[in-house]
Image (cartoon, rainbow, N blue to C red; front, side, top):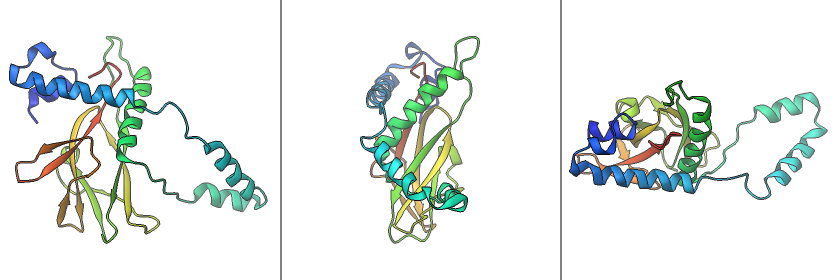
Length: 200
């Protein structure tokens, strides 16, 4: 990604400071971020309270050991990547309220973003991107063995490119990403946009 476009998305450069060929791309990113803000979830899913209460009722008679086991038990919750992006944007907006500096800019605060990929035959899945310098340092987890691999990664606000590496060899683009960017090697990197309160 062009460093001037990244500077615009990070709020370090105004739109007028971009050359004409980058302004259209910047306006596309503004539209994407606006869509993320507009589709952010506004509350818990319907029926969540009933399911939580039913689960608690089932654990109530198990005693302290049962409660501890319930609290520590890992759980997989399937979430579509688009919902993850929308949720991440909402979290960034909320966190931004508490991260404002005296001059009105956003403090350097990372936001946890959930990455999910369906890879039922994989033995290992790593997440790589510009935030890992394209090194497989983030290993995703398939705790229940259902072939859905996931992991939470702290990202700075801005636009990031990423891919999944399956079994150390196959580089796979996220099929559910909001946008894509040519990687220069005949494939496309997936794009994740982490929004900030001031709209950059």
